[in-house]
Image (tube, rainbow, N blue to C red; front, side, top):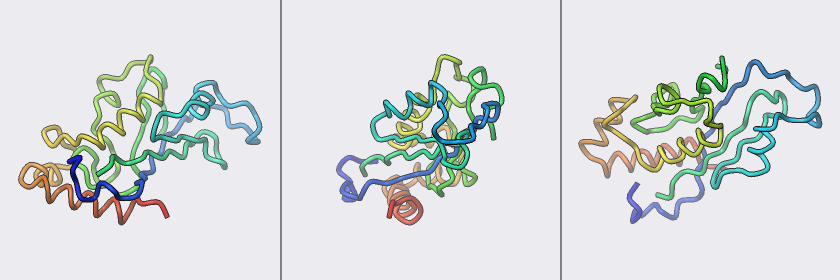
Length: 165
């Protein structure tokens, strides 16, 4: 989005993502030790991102990504995690089902990457929509034909569907 946007002062915006880890044993209580990667994710969160294990099921994460100013893990880490938006979002690289067009979630995945990297990449994608590699072709067309109006619709959807409070 344009840094000079008149909506730059909009309150922090939130989008919910759903991350799954099926082959991880489910602890019976929250006090049991969490896997090391989860502990690191909670102890050292990426700026603008929180990812906490869901209280009812530690295989699920409640993830919040601050918006820019203006399924299971089948073979994780050998295969990329399955990530999707639960919050409705108007973005050329995210379709109406919440699927995300992001290279590291597909052919550019490496077992060396971590959930933190995935979350930072999604946050960067929110800052820089790419209508030339769309998943939502109608939204991409809107961005190409009238970027300012497309950004307006994106802000409206964010306010309507993703704003905290």
